[in-house]
Image (cartoon, rainbow, N blue to C red):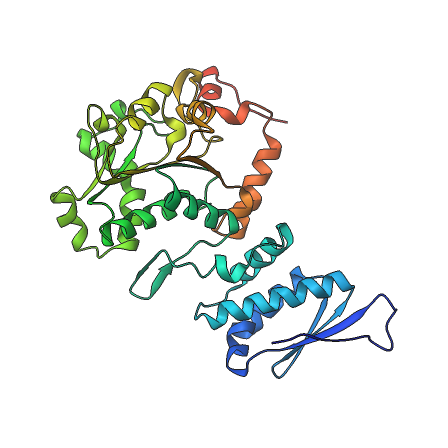
Length: 347
């Protein structure tokens, strides 16, 4: 698939025209249902695109045409790998090429982590790919970023994959028992009834990745454990894939306690969003403290994801950015402190 470049006779000298022949069997997958992928490309790219048969022609400024050529080449490679192309994949591919220019979206977006019943879990952005690679390469990884960036979901996919390939013998999923605006002691029900809804997102992710009928058996046998962080105290966790979710709501003491549970043959992933801290009384987040204290230690990696890595509805990314701009410096760091003082941030 070699681009053919010609100068448009009736265009200014700065304008160029180029075309790419797409393998005929990949055209429908490339353009998408009702040409939705083509429409996405037309919105995102500065070069003009025209499709005729299996030939795609670009025209515009040289740099714009060069980018369009590379985008199409990468998307064709993605479709050729058997992956379904969507406007979301198109958007992330273009962002990747514009952002670095050195990475291949086809290599990033076709990395299979886990497959179940025809559904394959893959990284969808460059930072997600780096995060997944860091989990493979390090014993302890911190995944820090806003909601919707796949921090916990990808970590759980890696944990399930590690269990299935016998790299570990068990999975341990934990969260600190702190919920925005709620105190567990005031909620109705037994301790289990109070905690289970808070741990529900972890159960939901497991059901996406494993046979739902198998999960209760694995939990009953201790192969999979989902528990509040307090249950980790006094234990040494060997041959386990351990995930601490919502780590921004740990205290420094809790974080130290958790990290020192690490045993032989184990891997730890800590995920959190430092803009969503619910600790009472303005306490400093253990996640922030750990990043400051542990950065630079060999075999510990800190992966940062941003609003550009949000893989939920595209509006989620815009909402994250809008809130970040709106909140005054420091106020986003501890919402519980604002509630305790009875104040709200307004402009």
